Length: 366
Image (cartoon, rainbow, N blue to C red; front, side):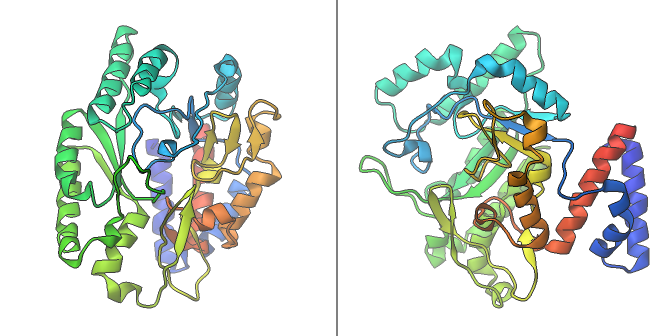
């Protein structure tokens, strides 16, 4: 963060603490005139651009592994138009990925399709490392700085007790961010192997998990990399180790994409919402040309090929419905069933939205 912006926010935070007024109420009083309409977003920080939905890994727990799955590619003949829209939104971070493996596009297509035609359906860590190596080699060949790699790791009964070795291997490959996700279940294929969420492990097995996850996260952070354990995975752990803290809550199954995972627990009697700023700060451009507020929902807020441009689409009624739902707690179904974000109260989220808008405005002034 810009040092001046950071200094302003620290002073503001001290003033809030000294006042004794709840954070959201203080935000309403002081930030509203500055940041304006909560439903509007003039800038986007993070854009996901999905070049393809095809993949050469075929993990058994992934939607791309299911029978009938059809891959598609982004129309890259429109790349300059996409770039122009992203620049107009002042996007500072672009992630070129989505539900597919980007390295299968264009120059690696023939190679990957030949592997798939040969029936190599099982995921292989060597393939992931090979993809990373090719990306780094291409960057060096062009005189560019190689990108920072992050791994998203699905934790299941088949993977959880090997996480220490996997983290050590990733660190050796210079992976700089590790995200641990809960397993979303898909129907088992006849030629696949059965995987289960960690919530279904035996009592003896689950007794090993807290220490294991703690050691893994400490190892990653000690090596200077980032570690995130997503909320649904933490909820699975709480179900076994922290019964007292969730005694007043309840759990129900939620649906993420086409799969099912155990839902989170949260206290009754509060106006709860998802702890999510994506509809204000993120855009997902799908390989099919769909424009979405995040990578979880399949609902379009616009069409890249037919729409009026990102600037208009990211402030239309469709995306404002997501924002309105989040700041009121009247969540749209994709947000209610989201398996990526945890829960918070409406007051805190409204303050976070105002803070986000204030930071973007201050950065422009600097």
